Image 1 (cartoon, each protein chain N blue to C red):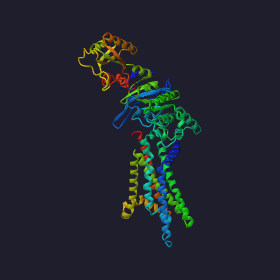
Image 2: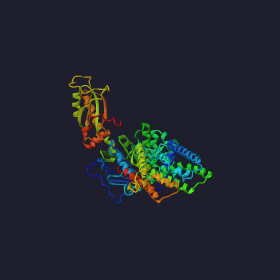
Image 3: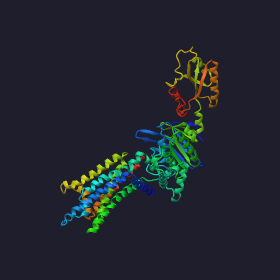
Image 4: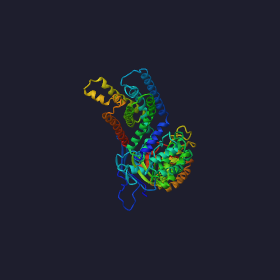
Length: 371
Length: 249
């Protein structure tokens, strides 16, 4: 497994089409670019996905996730670069490439006038499931996706969650080696999201799964490997554990009572703390306000501070550093009202990867995007 | 081409499951029924008429009703074929299945053509009635239906092409109606341009009106066949290319 690494302008790993000792990757993408007019949606992206992996494409909206998945699924063509699916080029051998893929587009568009079972049988026939297998395979897919109870309902009458599941059943009905899911949990409620994630994990046993999301915790819940896309570029890739560790607090937020200046000074002295800054609370939240200027004597004034850990501080020692911070504050005579791990949101991960550490500072409250 | 059958079946299903289809068919049959009634009434009141006009030739040829009906029918029949799938996004699902663009276009076209034929089938009853009460030239009848089939096939092909070229059903409908209207007006030009001029030749060649008159009198002209063959194949070809082009759009 490749270790977590930052993408550089040159391709991180040019996929080797040679048939050496390693089996060819199921999906192999090399120098893929895609333009819409003058806009570059995907910019020189290269990666490989092997059999049995569950790979998550992670990135903010507009990062090029959907475009990449659509190219893998054969709906869009690459502007340049090559894409091979199960050994078939998506341009030269589009037919075989598409046969190897079950694809669920974002929002899972379906024919509303059809009944679920009719629709899936139509899709199975379209995907060339042999006539004698069709009924059994459709039933099987409905079972896996959890839509057996609505099999004879019209799709128009289904809830959003069920429609998404029908889309999922469609993706797996022809038993393709690769299943591609574009934002499989978009627009679902928390319960449905939990169910959808369970289904995706289940799919990972029989299929190679590629999914996209802009929610960090989603890839953590489902994927074994993560590809980070940002502005059309592959920023980084690596196993999910790495991103989990990147999510570990990069800073702590403290609410203190007492002398803010002294507290700041005490925090700065703690080993491993790189930066200390006062932050304002959300307006109208009723919590402590801005750091009052010259509030050296106001004993009961509440202050909110953020202590950012040094980059080189190993993740395992951050807990210890947090303890030291609190101890130092108490020693300095400050009353610690609240301690909270900060950082670890998608923006923070991106910021640390793009070295725009300061971009993540101050401008926003941390840890909310997917807390 | 294995994708042809499932798509063809689904298209037919989708068409007949919507109320629009039944409304169109009912309107069509009411108009044709009244047309037939008036014609028969007209010919019955002129028992001594000796002209070469028969109820049959008048039903299919020399009548504006045929075209009016086609104007009203064809654009709504074809407008949704591709535009609806692109608007709702189902096209993404359709085209990521192992299907060829040609199979998709041909299956959808065959389905709408089947619907069109199904609309005309009940009118055969009129001919049966005519045949029972008097002489009927079944050869002319066959050629008249061939004409109806060809004109419809050409119009539907144009409509399908328009639907592939725009995302909006409404625009697809407007474009189809406009093109059909232009084709018709160009055909009427046969009667207003000077005989022998190049324009006259062109107009005569594309005059659906004149074609139908020929077909209704039992004349099957190979030039007409070529014209309608072109009218079917060319838009279908363009539509296929348009479907392929979406991948790059």
